[in-house]
Image (cartoon, rainbow, N blue to C red; front, side, top):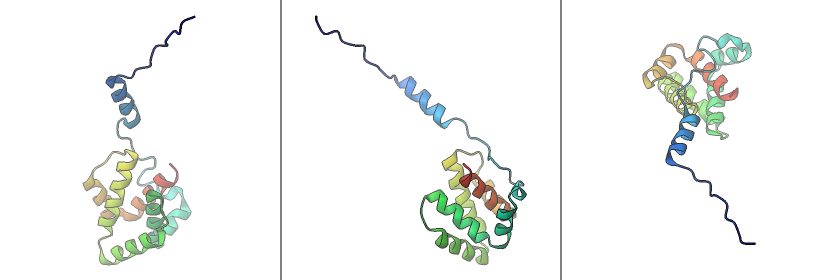
Length: 130
């Protein structure tokens, strides 16, 4: 009895491109609306009175590190200097890029400039409930 070879499984470049397209797909919307901040009253209260806590938790979870306190301090300093919209906008851009969410750089900065508590809550919920 002679050895019978089995057909080899081959992958074409078209199949690889198709798989990458299926994984990445089109950019999606945020899971939670910007004005949906009152759905979680506890998070809403924390963010309105101590936004540095929400920012620190979100940034720590986003980076998978234990830098919650350091990030909170960074946000507090930026808040007092009036540049929190820059720090928040950069983080929002990171979240959008990692989770393939629609939006623009200008939109990120404007959202944090005009309503940073709502933006922080939306980002926190997106990262923690993903």
